[in-house]
Image (cartoon, rainbow, N blue to C red; front, side, top):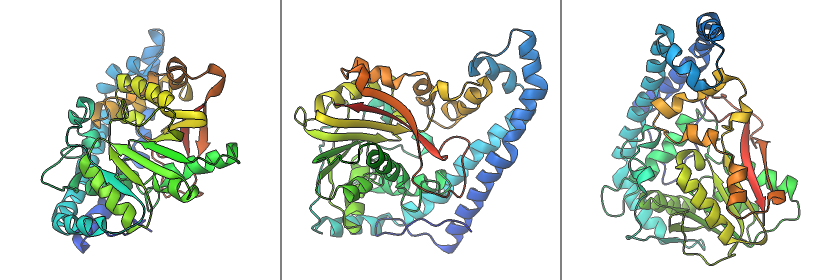
Amino acid sequence: MTPRQFPHAMLPRTQHDERARQDFVRTYKIHVLSGLGPGNRAVYDRKVKPALDRQGGAKSGRDIAPAMAREPFWQAWSSLNRTGQELMWEALTEPAFRELPRLLDAAKTLKARKTGGSLELDPQQPVPRYIAAVDIHGQPGGYGLEMLPGDVYAGALYDLSAFHYSLGGLGPQGADPGDSTVAFLRRRYPGFTPRRILDLGCSVGASTLPLADAWPDAEVHGIDVSPAMLRYADARARDLGRAVHFHQQNAEATNFPDGHFDLIVSQLFFHETSAAAVRAIMKECRRLLAPGGLMLHMDVPEANRFWPDAYDRWWRDWTTHFNAEPYRSKMRDTDLGAEAVNAGFARGQVFETKIPSARAERTYKSTHGYGAEWHVVVAEG
């Protein structure tokens, strides 16, 4: 059965034909990834690896790339996979754009709903070039797109795409990263009760809301650089009855006081962020974290040590080169634990691990992430 996204007032409503196209794209992508994708390994094992072994073997994915690029099967598969992403955007932009007038009205109406949350936008806050210059995942116009006053289109399109790109793997509310973060923290630190929480790069707030649910007495803040995302996130949270304070700020340099937060998290953020920004964000987290607090950054398990086989490293580079995720391979080469230490956290208080997804069942395990586990780097203040 095809999974369905949880409906709320801000989610674009799909018509029959639009839903049929979305269902087609989903089955198409599953077939390309899980049905045809393993054929690349067969080509590599049968043709490419023996040739590379005669030359000393492949030590990294970069050694494999030129040879595989000449293989017709790989060329066809890569084209099909990219086509699936473009078909997804075609299937999602239509309902998002058609529904935009209703969503603008809904956002205005919901702004008056009292939940204890707030929205703070800064017209002087620029969208960093590493975000503005890239349509991440191919999202038309990118995350920072602003077409008209009060725009929420980028948020609506992101909310739809997170569900469909992950093939439902993030759950009906897209909250699995947040749910998994909460589950891990409760297991590892059962007595931990943060008073103030900060979610960096919160986008539409799907993974911010589980933090508010887990610690209802805490003051929960989410920051992002996209005003359209934040307007959508605020309206979405109000419709779902959650109290979150959303701010248009850059995680590299915020205006919060030193030591202001007991818990600082990011979720699926670093692989869409430049390496220089990651270093600056780590330093800002050190400044913002209160004594005895916790910092946790979650992402897909990309680090090279998780993928000792050169083929797996090459395979995962597809998203960098063909899916508008230019920072993903660099993150794979980055030692996030070392970056936390360089930012000022004590070496003995920093560790990395993989944690299980909070969802017991998954409709599909993507070969490019959103599988059964996540990678986290944790620092104890």
